Image (tube, rainbow, N blue to C red; front, side):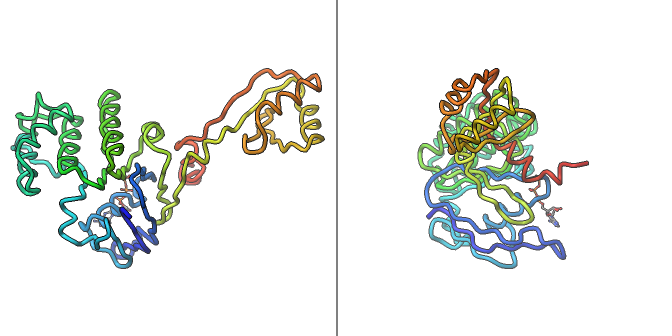
Length: 293
Ligand SMILES: Nc1ncnc2c1ncn2[C@@H]1O[C@H](COP(=O)(O)OP(=O)(O)OP(=O)(O)O)[C@@H](O)[C@H]1O
């Protein structure tokens, strides 16, 4: 068991931000935490990492209570760049962590190289761009080869090249056995990184595997929709209608069956589309009411 969260509740005075957070992660994976601004993602991460007290619930990480100080050596947390010191260099930050984590100092250099920040690691953080700061934060978070790493919006403000680089680093960590919990508003990036999404809604987590939702959903534009509907129904094949197109899922029957029915009944197929359900589509469905002006 990597992390087990049971009935976590967090209030700020009267405002109940986390109403009932419950989830478990049993094996290494990348989990994306997605939700609108103010839905409680940072609050939840801070509670899990024992940076914020909470009113109710229990958090167990790697079999230990989340307040266990030894977790400091196995878990890390990438927060926003306000934790950096402008007057210190990137190297100072990395060496400091080596020191407190009791790691050999050469780890600082190795990690800076692996993250691709060797050419600016000796400069003061004050002169760093947003992307350079994000990379330093990432280097700080992975220095101790954590078993679990939490990252609060690490892709925020990164240009496409840096975002790809960040993704590759996180995927690499995951393949080496690290569990990654990442919050982000960049749903395209999330789609590329993982199928496991925790949507934060109304103070709770809705766990979704987009792998299940990625079962092909086909849409067929045909010459005679009414006639096609009739023949599909006669053949006992469930079919929907969206914007004048026939729709069905591959769980109901294979695409070839639909093509055969059309061919056998003289119905021409003008277009076949496979509608993948990604994180953005699911987000729109879940938060539709909040998206309305
Ligand atoms: N220290 C605090 N005191 C009082 N209320 C707070 C505090 N920190 C956060 N909140 C409130 O808790 C709610 C959740 O905030 P949080 O920062 O956890 O959301 P988030 O999902 O991380 O948002 P974003 O996507 O904008 O980063 C918000 O309504 C916020 O105003």
